[in-house]
Length: 405
Image (tube, rainbow, N blue to C red):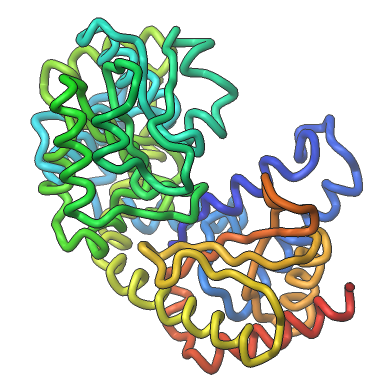
């Protein structure tokens, strides 16, 4: 399975309301056109679970269920059964005392940060302005949980130890998104991460990791998951990003923190009657995808290097592959064209050749107009690509960009 979050985020924000019945009809048709093209593509760098039909996803879940549990067991009720099995699996993988399943990562982190605010007596959370709660949650930390956020840095990277240590305002919790997705899936080095955590401890602050994509950080850090998680007081992980699950997340930490988090989970409406489809998909993803992630990260470096060489050899002018080399199996590509031009070229390429190099493109949030970026994910479907394959696909893409311009 691929990390389907890019497509999910792209489609969810494509047009005012997507396919909710309140959006633009032309935008809806474009969305359906893209989905049809991606489903029929014979070659992709990453194939998302969202590319598959409802029937295909149900069949896959049914086929995989027997590999992770006994289908004859009773279904879960309010978090027991298969959900409890998943929680134990996560605590074991991360080396924490306990873990709690949440229906969404947004809820998991809200609860974690609220718990820490109560325990530290300080409702201020230090994080990056590009972190998920600031960009993708509609101000939920303040609106729902009464928390306040501050920024040790606004640079497109995680803060340094000096920036944390010398920050002018007090804060109770330092939240670090690993990797920082909207800055280009960037990570510090292991030594830098250790120093940042130590600087927070010097200020008597607790540390929370937004580890939605923590799974693929092991290659960059050269450390296993328990050692990474041990740096923080709490860790959130996602089951549909990277692992290709249906939905859901887990919050991991000490037994006392997780007991408190379960109480707040209920108060926030996260005590669902049954969640076995999401729990099963998560367990399947852990078994299928986790062992493959180092190969995805290695292949992403091959793809990124080939793209950079291909742009230069084609005389494409200004471009950026960021970061180079990638820190995980995901990275950004930037080009000086409007997003709609690049999106149409990408779509025409897959429709006409059956090869999907890029998916959606987005206008840059800052800088001069006409600069756009896309996010590239490399997973199992992309392992067969050679550098020559990447350059050939890039040539076809650039040809269609020229036709659109």
